[in-house]
Length: 331
Image (cartoon, rainbow, N blue to C red; front, side):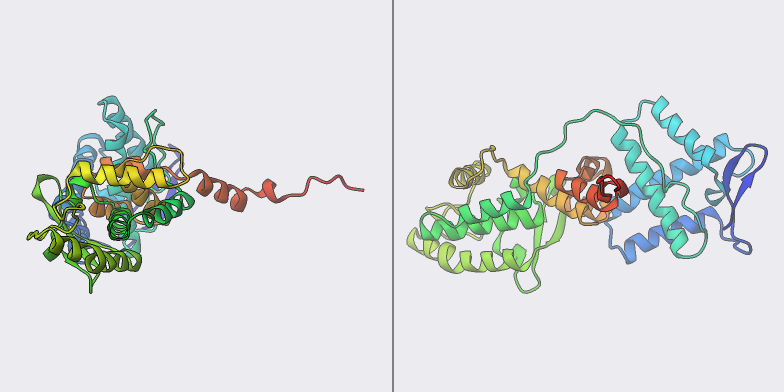
């Protein structure tokens, strides 16, 4: 694909690369196959991509007379499409989901040398007031990890395992309390969780979480189960060996915060917020984060696109030229 400027309308037009004959349907199928086979996205996620692409193609067919193909769009087509979504009162998150899907589609075509420019690369959505989720900074997480190790030995092992697993996987409390021994694969560092709508997904976890769980199973769970003659397969238990409830998890995390030096109130969901925030701040693809969190819609994941203050400051220090210029007067 080449980029040219239409001298009459002064707009950028994105055209086919010479010699490419693949139609929109084949391009879409190619992209969706890539999502399934190489990115291993769920069928629900792939269907969401397909819906967004189909909707955009339908818009082009209804509004554009000159170039209705997905790879023959121009900047005014993009602007017109977004304006239509705003006029239809779509929520900002829903629009962001559609833009993300289209941006990924065109990035795929660029990667495979079908086109050279991504018409959605520099799309900026209108600001919308919204309440951002609260999350922990790395130094705050370290304070929590230290606090979890305090107290009675057996319970300290359990508390550390709970904190590590929730932090490193971003699972919901309702998912954490239903994990059974058969669901956790320590060798391959994977957990099978059952989310909303009884949809299951595998989640990876790191070495710190693996070590914490191994210590907990040996030093805490096994002795407590034996002491209180309990026989069940739930991973996390209370001090009587019974399965932990959601309220029990909240109570444990409340205890950890009281043992730490932090002054903020802790809620289990803040660990989920922290997981998502750190993944995105460190370059993770939003669709991947959506899969890990078990969100059925990308719009739900969009709220995590904020960045920490320290991340903003680091970017400012690194990329703003004048910030690094000396203000000393010349002699």
